Length: 514
Image (cartoon, rainbow, N blue to C red; front, side):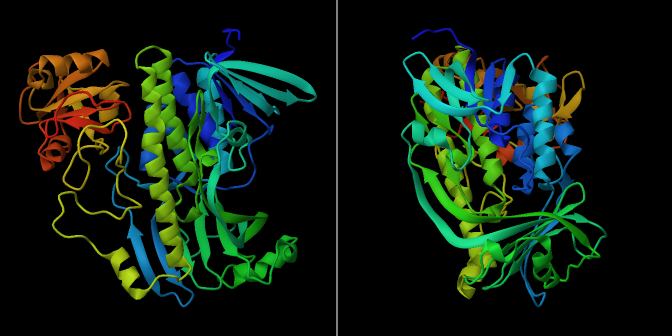
């Protein structure tokens, strides 16, 4: 097989997951060809929210300010009964990851168009997108992957070193590489009603789950003056009972919403899935997003989980392709992303049981209980900062451990007094941070050699009450990073390019094994 490549990576599917994959690869100088069956952005609003973790990924890709202009901060979550009794509320405290909002409401078609435009504006020389191309075959060999596609009766062959299947829940890529999708699909059909807002109504800016055994409802303000309701059909109803918007009005009027409040501009039907591929990789082909896992919408994490897949895989593939990391690093993709996808799937299922009134009083009390005597300040799982459950980390994870946690991102100063968010100082590197000490001085010869092989940088973080002592030191202006490290008893932490802590002196500072 020829080794002449059209690009380093072929991406099958160019929805949010595929676009983030392209952006991440291009950010690191890696070329990609994306093959997308549809010629335009899918017009229906599917995902409804992004959170601070996803916004930090956008920051890493240099598009955070651009995306922030087309999304809106979210107020809070609440679970209500039809008599307006509040069952549960999750307030959004200020984020620790770099921006104040924890969650944002989005209008997916608008945000997705902005993501695609960012690729075109920034990386037209590295990313080629073929719209209208339907992939008909994928073959791989020891040197690469060959993807065959057709558009307007013309066959295209794309040769790449690796391929990413980001072609959604009905992924043909998954079947072509011999992966199976395991799990179940709920037999309840839901109607999604997308509306344009005509006037404000009280508490519109809550994301409200109307809890009811027969007719639970998701009620959410989207960005750019849009609003959405997701309502289940009764057992004796079918989509044929709702052929036009006229038949939908009784559903909305039961919630107190009328023609004075909104215009219905589209509706669609879908079912909830709890499914995951038996593997996320076969050889040189990887699955990401809905091609790898499908979850109910209750945690607002389906699209975001896919984009996080793409970012994790993208920065690792880029470094492997450039020879900066060994190929074995690619095995950490599934090791890290599968547990996270499973976590959000389980969280979504649990929250869905609340809205459908399937939980007992004891279960509800347990969900609202706040653990005592914890080292890490408690936050509900839906809003808590992310933690790696496995993968390329060294040491035990858990409440009292810094290992696997995402480092907070306050405003930090450097020796010259330049103030910026932490990630802007860290760059796209592995970085060891020391609490008022040069971390390199606390490493053994072997430990330092291991981190040097990864191109690690070493930074002392000084308190703002002290002088800096070298040209590359940082100052903890907001008094966040040093107290955070001390909470876990860590004097030195090793931070990965995706801002997760891989190692600390509490568990040994040798480079984690693959």
